[in-house]
Length: 76
Image (cartoon, rainbow, N blue to C red; front, side):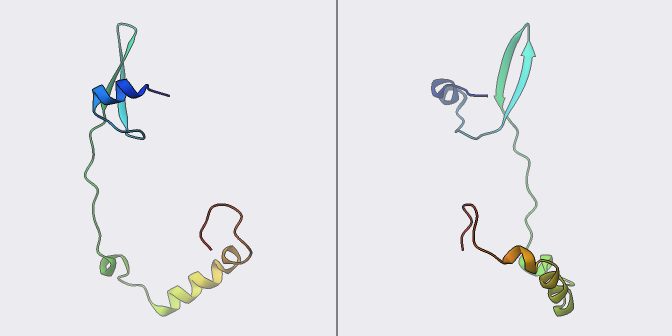
C-alpha cells in the first residue's frame, strides 16, 4: 500500500515502517505499529555447542551453494 509522504510525516513514520491498520465506519485508521523488543544474543551463546565436526558437516552439505558466479546482487 502506498501512503503519501505528507501522511507519513503526520504519523511521524519513515518509509518502510510497520503500521497497524484498522477499519472504523468504513475508513482506514493507520497507527505506527508497536515495536516489540527483540532479544539480543552474544556470539558466544549462539556458538555454544558447535564443534569442528558440526561445522565440517555443515560446510559439506552447503558446498554446492557456494560454487558458481553471483547471479543477483550478492557480494562476491
